[in-house]
Image 1 (cartoon, rainbow, N blue to C red):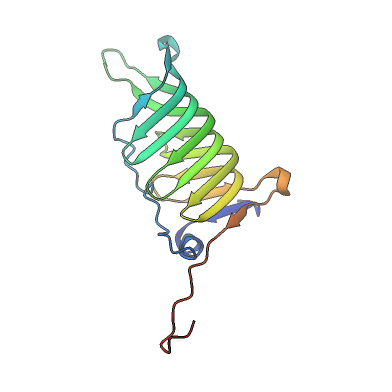
Image 2 (image 1 turned 120 degrees about the vertical axis):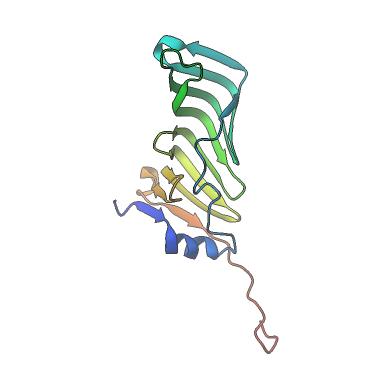
Length: 178
């Protein structure tokens, strides 16, 4: 891990997201990657011999409480002899990529959902927003099992990750003073 990498996990996540009063726990942690994946788009190109399906135009992918939007999506799958349902191993998204759940929104120029490894990676002008708090960087990895997120800084900004966190209003003390 480099100094440029910000790791949001455990105590650090609680500290960062706790500032804004938002739950630090992502609903994407322990996301069930074995749920059905529903995909809709304006166009589909099948390349069965290559084990790929390319969806184009206003692509929407839903799996449980997670939604992925993109301009183009390439689905990599394996279909064994005699098996009717192919096994999806990876989804590659390009153009205006947005991953959303009930607790956060992640955006970038491209994204990879590695179904086998249960890992989502977004790249290119990445924004990770939870409530009123926001982190920005160049590349984000999100582990769906552990909830660990790693965000690398932007080379154009001296390799630094940027964050903006809202601070909750100060609560009244026992004398009623603020």
